[in-house]
Length: 114
Image (cartoon, rainbow, N blue to C red; front, side, top):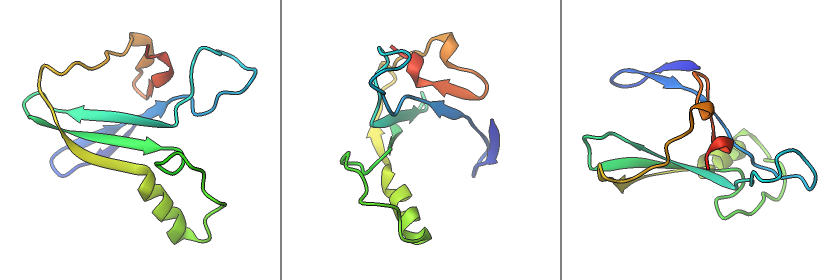
């Protein structure tokens, strides 16, 4: 866990675990891999939420042609893999509730969601 200072209050940052590769032979064959993950961060009193999508590769699912040539290209690649947008949100919107075993003080384990 890491604490950062936001504009209005401290922010608690935790890790996210998910399967990004599924080997041909391996443990837990029933857990599928993910190309990207999407989170919706909402406040119950607001009618808008923040949707954040993170992609392992290019957002279109394509691999990069090779290693970045310099730090500027590496930063550009990182920036294009994080997509944020404001989305409508209603208090009645239903989200998956994680099982207790998926959350710790340090990590949210997406592999344990149904």
